[in-house]
Image (tube, rainbow, N blue to C red; front, side):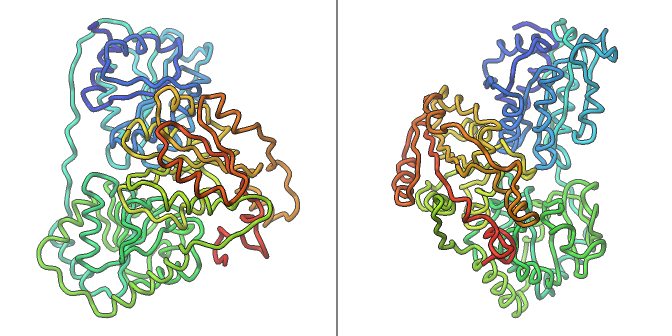
Length: 554
């Protein structure tokens, strides 16, 4: 093996568990590309667009628990990949974006394709670094891994001038130590236990920090020990069993007013492992801003996050998994008798909201029927990869997740995520059944990544909702400007023929009676399969001022 600066960077990556990179090649990082030849343990996934490559890396980072890595060229390549940086920041996913840069002698001369990446990515990345000496590459790689995974995980951008990638340098093998969980002092812990014991209407709001080995089990054990209902933060459906008696719903985009009012009547809120962002907090209205009406516990391992919006009674900058394990040790006092009635009230509201609807339409198949069929026939280890769009609402509202089934959906709401996320997920979890659901708008924002499923024989089921519309925006148009739909109607290709051109087995569904059999066959398929569903638009548009997927809809 050679001993170039690019080798030193990749050696640190490999030593810290990076076993796959996603890239679109470029002449500005030829040194790194060449060095990859000497690391056969690192799988190279060659992509056709930097946005898709970035989404793959975001999904991979979320599943692997260490940085997903995407490599792109300067200028256009970097700007194409920026959507992944934003998604990683919004979703709290560790990501490293490596960008080839112009030669260091030409920096800040407005050279061909030059960008000042500190200015471009500074507001959304945890760290942007542009080394200027080859000896710095290993050190930069090591710090990038630590930065991307510490506190609130997120994106790091490494910018490497093309003329510092090939020099002979030392080859250190540095491994980042695992973070040691810190705990609050004994005084606050005892006070918190007292609060837990006396609360009559406590509520846990659990977030993505429980998506770690042992996290889900610890959360369930804690909730059961203290008899506390569990609501999940935005799009974190799979961190707590949705069929458990203590599960009381997700805080998302379309919670009924009655449910939020019930949550608001709690006397103790434990926001554990969640940033309590605008959607989880219902536009910063739950709990009260800036001082909650009830006792408010906020636990997250980042002092920037704890108390950022809501003033906590107990602000705990620590690992929420370690915290609840400590709170579950020893004898736990019996819950107040009134707590069971409180749990039942919240459970009934959640069950009513999640009940599968009876929907019919004359203009196509209601997509909720497809989702219901997937739920019936999906294997136990199914992973649902969702793009952004109205088609996904039935999954969020009705599809009950009970791990190991997983939900891979962008908290950022980024369209184009679904197909690349499905590829990365199937590569990372080859024994799982991966189902990708995407709208006709989002599919053509990426979609070309489907060729990787053919190349690598990945048995992904791609399901596209074809209603010739940007339906989420159409819903808002219809509500705000009835009958005026400029810009949201789509003219589409023949998706079935397109998928077949990629080499994917394809089916088009136009009749509701066909759904059940085709979905059942798809779940048993051992090769990639594409299902185009001619879906109903009318079934999701507002009726009498409400959409089926909006608050307080019937």
